[in-house]
Length: 408
Image 1: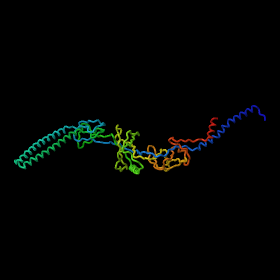
Image 2 (image 1 turned 90 degrees about the vertical axis):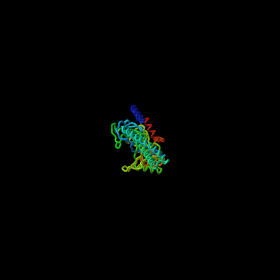
Image 3 (image 1 turned 30 degrees about the vertical axis):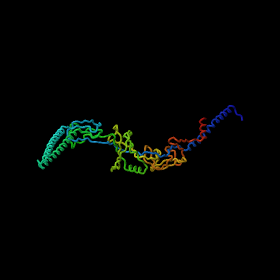
Image 4 (image 1 turned 30 degrees about the horizontal axis):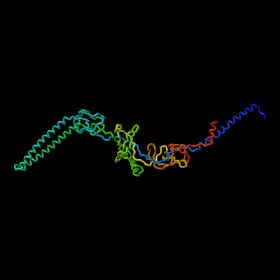
């Protein structure tokens, strides 16, 4: 059959076009196969390996700041307040004068007592001389025994009067000293409740000011009796170990969420529980050099009460929950297949769950990639810490087909 030249040229161009399209068509046919193979590759999941480690047993408990020492300043004698010598809110030292009461009356009483003492001492000298004289006469039989006995008794009475006069003099001196109202302890003094010109009655004077010792300072925190008893049982059984009693094992969390820079230590727990709340008070001593902690402040105390020497801990995202709220984890078996495994969880410590039961050392627990797995599925494990990394590999034929299609 004869074919004209123009028609032959057209057929030649069509054949050439088909030759160029053939590789692309073949590559296009291979793409669904490669994609299917990629989808059937085991999904990647991140895991952590279970390893026991020492973890402190910490609890965040509510507490109130309390002064280490507190004293109320009161007047011990009556009188008119003539002077206040302290600045409100300042630090005062033990024994420093805070108020002055008019001393005139007590100066007069002291002078009267001293005069009475002098009179008693003079009488003592006279009675002593009389006794000595009669004693000498009695030895010469110039005086009777009865006369000497009267003189000796008068001397003893004079001694007693001198002792009483000295006591009265000392009491007057004390009352005069008490006109200077002094600080009973060192610390920071509060507001002045009375001012100059106030007439005080020693029997009902009330509080003049309050002094609180604030460095170091106490924090009284509360914990339920049930938690405290369980902690004691765990310590007795050896599941937990004691912390160093002298170590700083308490940190304060302020109202704004910040951590107080100075750590404190637990002093003791109360010997009785509050019947209305069922809680026990724990007292913490903590440094307060800048007076940032004020009595009455609310804080939260993060207290380390014990140490679990071989604890098993997992990130929070590794814990799954069943419909009835029980905890379980995905475990990667030796054949790289995953399975759900029930566990018993303990408290959360620093955003990690303590596992009380259900896991053994060396087991691999999934922490990422839960949405891609189901029970019995084979997975590609990747160490969560990046130590062991495994990547899925595409089949060689599919890879070659995709590369060839991209080139063309």
